[in-house]
Amino acid sequence: MSNHRHIIYACVALSLLALQAFAQDAPPPAAAQPCLACHGAQGQGLAAAGHPRLAGLPAQYLADQMSAYIDGRRTNAIMAGMAKSLSAEQIQAIAHYFSALSPNIAPSPPPTDLAQAALGQQIAMHGDWAQGIPACFSCHAADGGGIPPEFPPIVGQPAAYIEAQLKAWQSGARQGRADDLANTLMQNVALRMSEAQIKAVAVWLAALPSAASNANSKDAKTKH
Amino acid sequence: MPQSVQLSLLFALAAALAVPAASAEETKPAANAAAHTGANFQPPSEADIPAGEFGDMVRLGRDIMRNTPKYAARFVGNQLSCANCHLDAGRMAGSAPLWAAYVSYPAYRAKNRKVNTYQERLQGCFRFSMNGEPPPLGDPVLVALEAYSFWLATGLPVGKEAVGRGYTDLQMPAQAPDYSRGEAVYKARCALCHGEDGAGRRAAGRTAFPALWGDQSYNWGAGMGSIKNAAEFIYANMPLGLSYSLSAQQAWDVAYFMNAHERPQDPRWLGGVAATRAKFHDSEYSLYGLSVRGRVLGDTGAPKRRSGKDEALLNE
Image 1 (tube, rainbow over the protein chains, first blue to last red):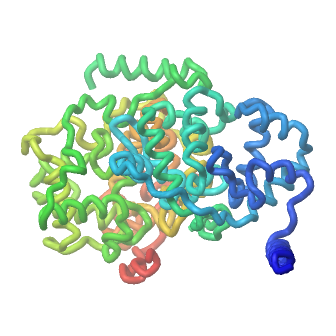
Image 2 (cartoon, chains in turn purple, blue):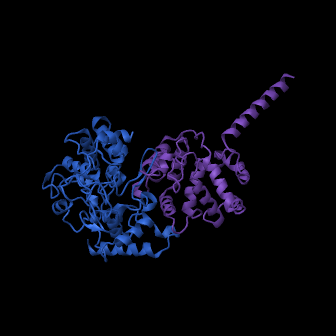
Image 3 (cartoon, one colour):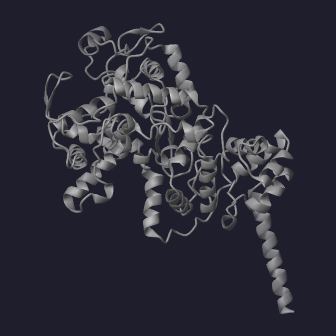
């Protein structure tokens, strides 16, 4: 009996929590439902599997990535299939939905390998100019929170995702449109990075807090 | 410039232009600004900054370079940082490295017609490039920058022209620099970061991409106001990470375009734009006081006095 009561209490509590969540965020558009399985119910990603967060990313950036999967500038069989099934309106709805979510993501634990952490921090904050590698933060903002819409946040993403993307730029599996300077810049940087640098910067960035994401902040949108 | 260097530049350029951007492996541009300078001096590694009072001063100098509005707030009148034009915090050859400057002073400068100490040279940076107030000689800001420069120059002979000093020599353009061609280059290769309006962009409470003209940029007295200096800097350093990817002509054109916009008044203002041009800008490389697109550049009246204190609060 008391077990049952506990279960009922738990159900009531969960319902209240769910209601609260419902009150805070609009429900996802129907087209966004399939995204949640891999990118999390709050668009927070799935770090263990290397699935990136979508929450708080600039809407224009998200929409552009979907079109990149459709026209082959980014290659991922699952994402290409998903994106191709969507209309332009659905893509916009999905992009705006996730962009508006708060990126409330617990950072990965700090790197345990201190030498690797130091290398990651050096690349992210100051680059390796001898190899022509600018600091990540010179384009993705001093806190890694991004400068919308062209420069996405690079904090609050799983290390595995950051590593995979840098390697995708190296291999050409991730590309921009021919006249896309932002992509040329990124591809150029990736091609100059060593395996050790890529791993180090991915681990270091993943351990940074994402709360200061600039995707929706006034600061980043306002030009002085 | 020796002919062999000119030739190799031409070939590098031709190669960069001939191969489509998609095949990134073949089009890798020069690694950095140093690549075409012939410089082989390596400043010491940051990890080797010594402990103790001297090392602390060196570190402060490095920090001032990277975030000048924060670490030298009292003397800064815009939102630029030294490292915007001295890449890699003053370490990069072909990007006006501090180690090369350090061993070149004291020296006579035509700009102020006297022998300048290194600190006096640094004062000029604050007055013009930072559109601020020169720190008094001996101020910790100047001591820190001097200590950092001295440390960077470890092992470099003094009084000998250091290879890699200043910006890389650039051949004169085949065609006179042109506003419209420069505008096209700007839109394609610069506006992404610096904005269509040249005002740069801010994020995370600080400058992300520096302003190239307007109130928050360098003033008319700065070295970068020279189309030649600007073209040399751009050619070797811009877009960031894509050194030597523009043609010499493109660099000259876009430098002209950038410096054909309004910016803070020259602090040496003599009460009129014509008089100020005659005394300080009598050069084919300065557009100050000239009419471009129907407007006389620099005809904006006396310099506005800035309160360094207000700026400091603004940047907190």
